[in-house]
Image 1 (tube, one colour):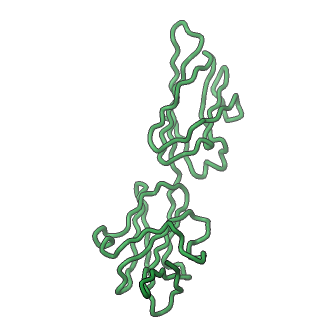
Image 2 (spheres, one colour; image 1 turned 60 degrees about the vertical axis):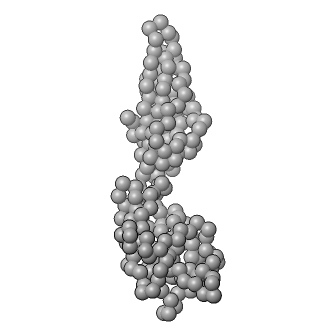
Image 3 (tube, helix red, strand yellow; image 1 turned 90 degrees about the vertical axis):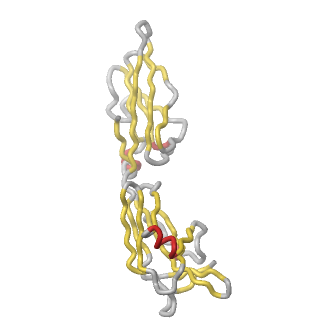
Length: 213
């Protein structure tokens, strides 16, 4: 598989549109006469486009005209956050070799916003009648995979911490899978309070929204 530069006698993808709803992206485009299949590349926004490389990347998905007609477009679940770029390459063959038509005009490319992924958190405190400590159960519910380095929890005596520096900060020791993540219970003092924060608000606040349940 390799690129071939677009020329007037080669097919080109045009009129590409995109729509995102419930974290599903729908792509539609105009199929040139005679073209039976395309390859679709998906990558992060802000980076280099795949056609700038000398050879096509490995992360390409073959999609046929029949599949497109049956589904009324191309549908893709967005597990990413931030900007996502889709590039649709016309596929042609020459002497049994697969060629991808490289379009320098960008008409075969569209950018969508996957938005901020929400991270819901819940903190449940329980204390026995005659105990000096209290047991804390924390639950993280994520829309997408979240690395352990994104979040931390802060413990403060006598009141709730106002930010990540307002108390003793602790890291999480495991990544968070999409869905509900119930963390092992921890023991804290009877006058201690806990809150969850981003480890780097300006950095991770661009991609995630931290929401108390």
